Length: 315
Image (cartoon, rainbow, N blue to C red; front, side):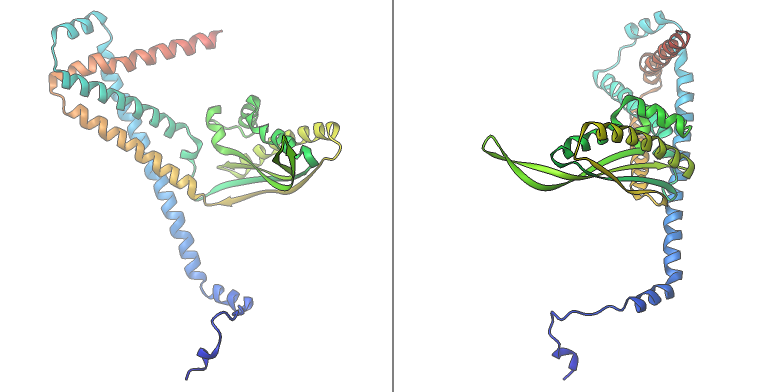
């Protein structure tokens, strides 16, 4: 009988870490190949996504040029509505096609302006600031003060200026985050019920950027905000202590960004395909009506937005 069967099934097996290390070193070619494949896949999706968005923008701009003729004479559009009779089903499809066009425009705007969509997911700089807070029964309140640092209206502008980011402020929020991990130390009775009391908490700030310099500049803005809150807490709370646990910047491959890029690109293509299929179903006369009555709305809307922006600039 094989002696191996004499060992009990639950006996621990000791792993030699030195042997494991040498084994991994022997497999260095496989490890490098896996890393390269991941980088190529991430970069490929990034390039395809960017080309798709650029082509979509060019097509949309060309269509808007064609639609301009539909608003040059409002009387012509009114006469067209009155004289040209279309079926209720076609009218419904035209409205549906126009709504999908709006979804397409919004998704295209996001894909072109979101920093996440512009980054190479295989080379993202990730910054982290982690702090340990101990303040007795005031820990939860103080942790909330730190968490609210990223909620301020001024923080987005400061981050944008510090890293010289060419993004709208609404998109800067995609690059930052804050999480609080509270540790339950005890419970107290409140109105004959139990209430959790947190005496320790960990606050973690995260930053993502396309370059190491941008990441460091954004972290510095948060460090300064943390210093301000820390000074206020030192003055207002007795049993309070703040300790930095981690302050680092590293180059990572962000699978979440890769997934979001693919999802947003797929969504853009879905909107475009649905819109195109509906518009291709129109006859030549129906398409002329659709361009004059529906697509002209976009042109009017763009002109109004341009006039509003010009007025705000002058003011």
